[in-house]
Structure formats: C-alpha cells, structure tokens
Length: 226
Image (cartoon, rainbow, N blue to C red; front, side, top):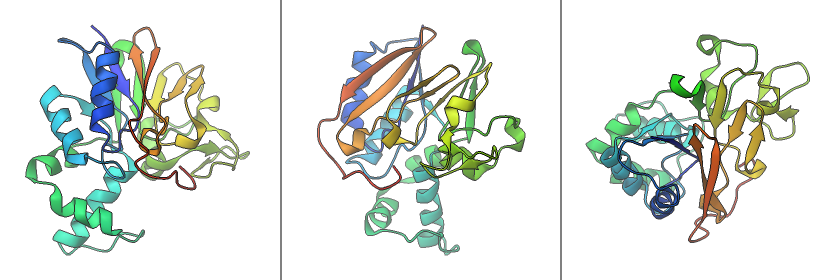
C-alpha cells in the first residue's frame, strides 16, 4: 500500500485522474492532497467530487480559504475579504453545493502521516517553531525565510523555507509554483504549476518516488508570486 501526496490541483480533475493512473493508484492506497483543490482551473466541482469518491484527505490551501471567505461574504453577509472577490470566484461560490462546502469546511491546516514520519501542509512551516505555534497565515502562504529567521510570503525575501527545515519529519507541501519541484533533505515541494500548463506532480510514499503528468491545457497565465 502506498500513500500518494499530490500537489496543487486547482480544479484540474482530468490531470488528477491521469496522475492517479500514472501512480497506479489502487485499492488500499491513500490519497492526500496539499490543498488548493479549487479555483483557477476548469472543474473545481469535479475535483471535490473525486475527493469524496476516493475518500481522499487534503489540507486547506490559500485559494480554498479565500473561497470560504468569499462564500461567507456573498452568501452569509459576512465581512468582505481583504482581497477583492473576482467574478470567477463569485461564480464558483454560487456553483458549489452543500456537499462541496462540506469538503472545504473540513480541511485542516496540516495533516500528520506518522507511518511515514511526514507532515503535509499547503505552503510550509517556519523552522524552529512547533506546529501549535505556527502562524496559520504562513502555513497557507510562506515561501521563503528571511535572514532574521522569520517566514515570508515573498519569493525573493530569503532562502526557500524548505531548505532550512531541519527535520526529522519530512514535510510535503505546495503553493510555490514558480519554484517548481523542490527536493530538500526534509521537505518536498509539489506545486509544479499544472493550472499554468506545466505538470501535476505527486510524491509516492514510502519510497519518495516523484511522478508527474503534463497539463492538458494552459488554463490560466502564470501569476506574479505564484
């Protein structure tokens, strides 16, 4: 039995199916995703339906969190998110049904895979801090570590956070598409920019085998800071 950890899917359900086939996903295997299940790509509802069908687990991604905040603002009269709600996001809010929201509402900030001595988070961790002391916003958005040791969302504020992670737990994460596949001693970054026309990537545990499939289309031009 294997554990297949998949990078940012962003609604690319066809590529997710391609990747599971390439990994030879079968009965008894465990599917775990690093978040950003939805938004940007062609079929967010299809991804959520496949997650339900396969009993997959996922952590919360920053785009999943933004969609939840948009739902609260648009459908429940809550405060407006700090980032403006785009028309595509508003459409997606209105398309999702109760079963879809149940999946998103239940996503945790991190998952432990003790059988592999591994953790799954969306963006990363600040080295030297226990999980309980990690800033939730950095769990969703960190990319680099500044010279003073603090975490940053910026791409150019310091070194990639994974290069500073001392272990012993292996951390599997996504979020930083512009950095591509990251392979550090104790951290593996799996966001290889599928929605931007690149690849969807998985790490198969316990052997830490990397499997990628090509995107079928360019669904969105790559954004600054991706």
